Length: 209
Length: 209
DNA sequence: GCCTACCCCAAACCTATGTATGGGGCCGCC
DNA sequence: GGCGGCCCCATACATAGGTTTGGGGTAGGC
Image (cartoon, rainbow over all chains, first blue to last red; front, top):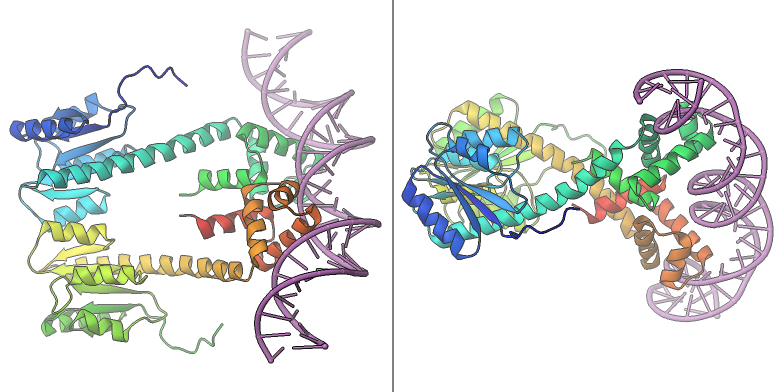
């Protein structure tokens, strides 16, 4: 939609650690294989800065000044921010690990870890983020089409995708069949569906998951 | 289908631990709230015994004689056995926890744990198993219907659910339109679909996720 | 050789769907 | 008051979908 003049299709890794040495080490590790990197000493700083257009992930120390890494993860997902998270921790603890993983962390690395472990985790996380972005893209296009429907059209769409015939829909809504046909045609046009099968799948994607 | 004369709609918990004291303790804990329990001293024993019709889950010590709990989990999922797993471990280790959780474990409890933690985990696991069984049920019914289709009918179904018109399908397959209609009718009947929308959803469920 | 399952097709007929033309009514906004 | 969006409906016509009746062909199994 916009002119794609931005010169950074590079993945971005956000690093949060209170130890400057670790920030530097990770930063150069990630840059060495072509990722962009932003580093932060605490969780709060991330919120002020981030959210680019490119696939990205968050590498997060569990123990942080202020909000802990785990709490920050919770905050993010409650705010609807679904960036993949990789945890690091210096002092292991199973409940902590379980909590992080249950909340959807991609990995949980005990320090010290080998560079390759971290790179694998980041690579997985970025791949996950690419997929998520792709899915989000279509889903939001769908929703924006669906938003252009009038209330009646939405009702008709619901019943059409439930498998009812025009006649039955007309009965259900107290309309004449011809009116249903018109709404139905509008729905197909506005939703940009080229077949009923299309429309059913769109309805599934809108309602489901 | 079968006469439901079996008297056990009770959930079942399978416990695997090499320590007899722990087996006994967990057994009476689970029985006290109405679950059926089977205990095993090693992973190999489970395979010989199990697999009932009721919601169930596996409570597994990580360190076991012979195959480790984690390896056993891997074996199970490779064999297509998707029973929810809860791990226990006496000596914590983050990589171990991560591996278990990544492989889909419901929880990972460090010994000693409180009874309530275990009960919560089991309750979650059983609920998960109930859902899985319900999904598996419809999915396998679908697949068994789909298996009764002839090769041609399968092809036609694929194109129909892709949204093509009979005419286009006929062209695609080098048939006359009337033949397509007949196959299509057979598909609807055999798949027990009452509308095209139905059929599309079935196709999604068969192929997708 | 016969039976069955699968595959193909046609004519006839009915129903469902889609679209266009041409109406009318209500409401909110400029 | 006029305009636009939404809602409703009818007639008419064209196309798509679905079933029945009645064919014909091949391949495999008993």
